[in-house]
Image (cartoon, rainbow, N blue to C red; front, side):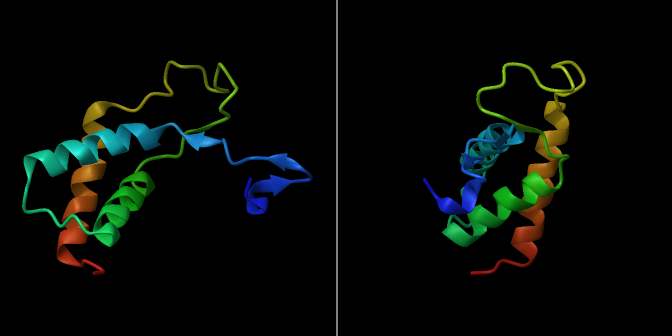
Length: 98
């Protein structure tokens, strides 16, 4: 366990943004559809981080069954996720950090 994720002895490393897996899925699809995209670690990480930053955070504890907001109204439309990934890819293409 990484001590950086401890608060008074309680680990918070299992708290995740619900958008993470949705973003990863869309980024993988983008790489499948565009073989010209740079696949270096920096570009992949930049696309991932930027995509997450374009969306409102949706953090949830790993052991919590319900969110504070309820499931309805908490989900983000697929088109909005695709747009976040598309925007991130375009930004990284214009200014890659590799």
